[in-house]
Length: 156
Image 1: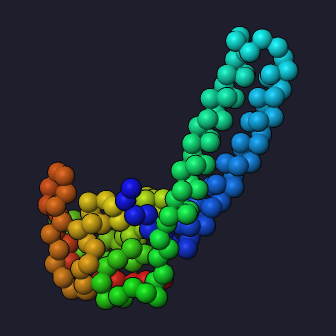
Image 2 (image 1 turned 180 degrees about the vertical axis):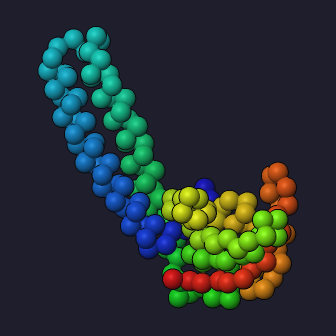
C-alpha cells in the first residue's frame, strides 16, 4: 500500500466524511430492522437495498479508518520552502499556452482540478515535485511532453 500524505485540512476532511458515514450506517441499521419486521425478507426490496447500501458504507468506513491511522501528516514547517512538494502552491508559465497557471499540490483526497488542486500522484504533479524557482521543467504526460517554467512556490 503506497504512503498516504495528508495536510491538516485533508485529514479533517477525511475525518468529517468518516463521521457522516457512521451516522448513515446507524440510519441504515434502523431501516434494515424496520424492513426485517415486515416479514418475508426474500421478497423485500427495501431490506435488500438497505443491506447492500450498508455494505458499501462499511467498506468506505473501513478504508477511511485505515487512511486516518496510516496517513502521514504533512507539516509545512518541515518542508524545504525552496522546493516544490505536497502542500505547495506553484505558479508556472506554460510554454504551449503562453500564460501562467497556478496549481496547489494536494493529496488525492483533497484534489479538485476545477479549483487548481491537483493530486501529487498525478503525472503533472510528479513532474513538478522537487523542482525549484526559475527552473524549466519538461513533464512527460501520457499524451505529450509539457514544458513549464517555475515562477513562484508558496506554502500556506
